[in-house]
Image (cartoon, rainbow, N blue to C red; front, side, top):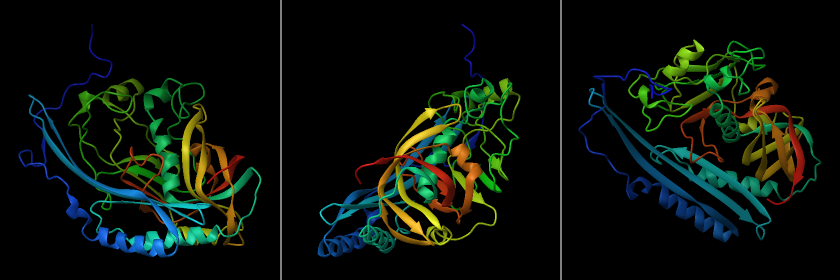
Length: 370
């Protein structure tokens, strides 16, 4: 037997973090200001016949990586989230809100309460719409869900071997190709101030995304898309040799921005003459890996936008579209914000993403239910 396919020389004599310090566990005190505010929201909701379902969680994970070659690496990763579904009118109306946080001191129950109440109020007017292509306003969390999936198929080796949407016709990868119609930046950066992340590779098993032989290798900023151009694909050191490209490990955060973009989700609504505003995606699955065509459902509120205003709620849809194709159909973008994906909330955190308006998003069939 020869060396493993992903073999590279191991790092030695690298020390990062306080190796000897004890792990600091989380505890109920992290909810000390959040819980009373949540209790007040419960009381108001009971009085107004709004049912709330959800959970709050907080973890503080410590990872140590050590080796006989002198690796002494430590990272601490506190993270928490709130997810809440609100229902009213005998559960005929339903909406959702989610927030990610480090320590719950920045979670605004007033904002969550206001969002849920506004969305439930919008659902008082019903508008039936057929399947079709619509200019669609995606909240930052929905954008995060789409592009998390894109990153999961962004390994350079698969692209080099002709097995992904990033494979170039005739061989090689699509690195250097302009994919977006706007000046869009998409990157990982351990030094990004709002979402700091680990600056070294730490993985327990090898996969297409990482290699145990790379443990302890430094992680620096990697531009996946720069000015709308595909700049990098995920590499281990072994795959970088095969593809003759730079070693670009997947970092622990993902940040997207559009040059010159600003404003909130509400500001984007004002820019849409006739379209849809979504709440979340659900049941996202692959249809065609060659185009990264995905399918999924809308959930917990789809709203019809006319003349820059929400005029009512419409039916849910099954959709079929590709995040790579969507990159070339961006009509408007808002400010980048720390967000929480819904479908992949348990798998991906540390994402700062703008809300987007995508032209002609494909709502393929009408879907029943909330």
